[in-house]
Amino acid sequence: MPRLPWNASQIIPSKTPVEPGHDRTTYSFTGVENLQLDAFPDGRRIWRVRYRIYQSGKRKDRAITLGELKDVTPGRARALLTDIEQAVGAGRDPFDEADKARRAPDQTMTFSDLVLQWIEEHSKEKKRSWKQDVSLHGLHIATRPLGSLPAKAVGRQDLISALNDIRDGAGGAQANRVQGLISAVFTWAIDETILDSNPAFGIRKRATEVPRSPKISDETICKMWNEWDKLPTDVGDVLRLLLLTGQRCSEVCGMRLDELQGASRLWVLPGNVGRTKNDKAHSVPLSPTAWAIVERASLRARAGYVFPAREVDGCMNRHTPSHRFFDVAKKLRIERFRLHDLRHAVKTYLRGMGVPPDIADRVQGQISGLNRGVGYRYDHHEYQDEKRRALELWERRLLAIVNREPESGERWQP
Image 1: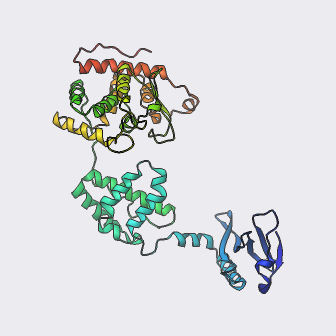
Image 2: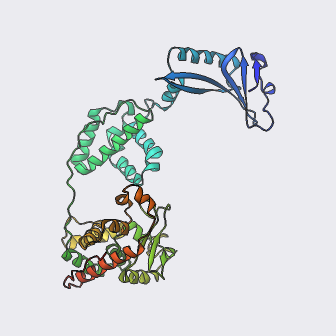
Image 3: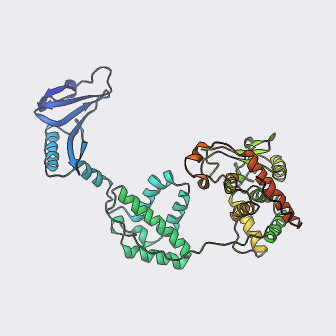
């Protein structure tokens, strides 16, 4: 590291050239320890103060940028160095103090602003369901006095009042969702040193939620399957595939022609492109009935999608079959039964016919149930034959149900 005598009048760019072949050259000064000047090929000269501090028995090497030479004179740089050295001598860490001050919200930052910052910096990067957070903020935070309060000033009673208001207007479950969002925002803000406390800690939930227990019966499935004949063909096809395969609605609606392998009657969803919830590649052997539906639907394909949207580019929106499903359930007076329960029904019937839990999980691409230690990580077998046997076993049971035929009693054979 080049070392120069401290002479304020001589510290100019022409006296601090960048060494050939380097992207920067750092200069130190005799008689002024801990102060450095970084010279860059583009002409920038940046002051830095480097110091060492010990906290809880651990050494921390710090560097604080003071600014460019054109903005901070040598005399000013030395004065700032003195302030930093005095703070370190008093046991403080100027780096941490500056970082905390930078992150701390001023009085103009509202709680709504803080939530939006959390969505941008955390939710969008970490959560697949970040759009739900955007919706909760827009519906229940930005529209209430809570959202306009300064983030630092939000108190426990402000949160309780807002949550009670949400409970009374939108229901206890919605209030619980908002409470979870608020708690996540405050926890993140503390981790990022934006706030010092979490007023949401320990607030009881506004309602006790009871898990839904939809009645899944042969009669329910039979009624709905036959009623789907009256729906638009593409919607009816999607609903039948959901029940035949046990896959997610978004996955079936987004089915592409290039995901289908005709020779093996296989549907292969690629990983890392948002096609599956866990971003893992997943293959679904299609039973004869499922393949017949896919072949027929493929004749109406557009832009590569087996189930294209009607009036815009892209695939069918997952809400389209969901709404039609709800309409059918309401018409048939089937209560507490939503579209995703078809996926639950497939798993329930598979297990009831003796399909092993790991095979049932693999049929639906549920890797969370398979993480059982090192053995799982070593097992890269696709289990295509086993998944096909399971889905064809379910197809035979399903066709017997919708045709009102006696149950054969057939079960999974190891």
